[in-house]
Length: 73
Image (cartoon, rainbow, N blue to C red):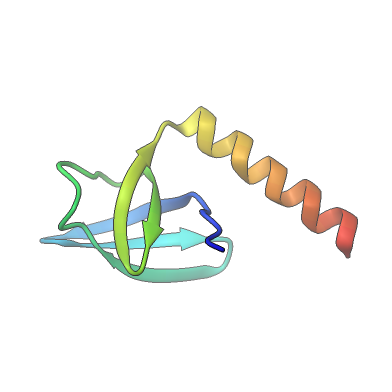
């Protein structure tokens, strides 16, 4: 099972983006994407950005994750 979490791009350098989720940051490869900019939200699989989401869709998804986490904690 794969869980797709929207990650916010906080830095882009060459074919690498630094992405953020909460207090966690990671570097992901951009080789499969045409354009990615700081502030974009992306879906990552196996270390590669595979899809860009608009901010509204990312916000909806993140709100659902928060709702689930609030219920199980």
